[in-house]
Image (cartoon, rainbow, N blue to C red; front, top):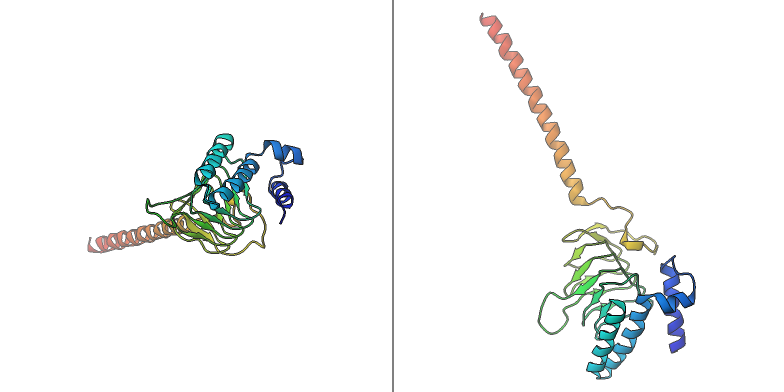
Length: 229
């Protein structure tokens, strides 16, 4: 794939996933996610060629320009899109597949100071909502969605939606490839909330039965007292 073709593909992604994009000139000049990806592609090339300091310098410049910090060692696939972008952090050993989307404030971070694989792997088509943290050498399955502000520390299956702190899977069916802005799934009912609600309902019903039994006992005691009198 030629450099020009790759550039066209990066621009087309913005139009596919951001309805606010109006024209190519606006994307080229005003989209920090686009700028961050161009700089990362260059910095990653330098890093792999053994020019580690130059790669880090390009990454540092990209952070200063866009507010998006991507380590030059991170591996990122095609048609990657960062919307808004401010505060995004992607660690050195992160691996991101094709057609993934990140919103502002997302962290793909490590949980260890040890060398080696310590950052997440995102498979193809993952969407991560604003403010979410995906931590450690875990895997997020293909076309999975991570809700805004979730903290993910365990693997997420393919086609699942995970929300909460720590994140819990609330949906495990596919959505026919439909893009989901901010990683909003079809069913946002948290299973823990549903269980708590059912327990509260059951407790209320139990209290009602106890009250009815107590009333019946009081009535029987009253009848026995009347007969004794």
